[in-house]
Length: 75
Image 1 (spheres, rainbow, N blue to C red):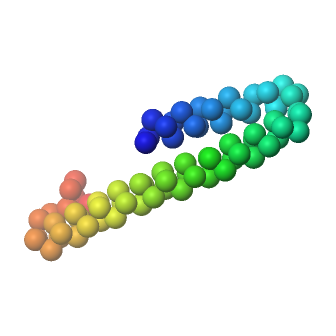
Image 2 (cartoon, rainbow, N blue to C red):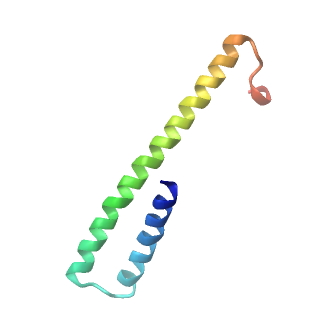
């Protein structure tokens, strides 16, 4: 799924260039709104993965502290 998200980000970047170069038909603005919606979807998914990774790291750290192990790198 990450490859699809990366492809969507690249498509979104490519979508900006015609607008920057002065291409402004009505259908193109609709396309840009659709791409914006896709970028919101990608951002929500990526933020969810980041939060899950942070929660997992916190869980591991808490478990190590409970066992009496010193935290990684003295933190």
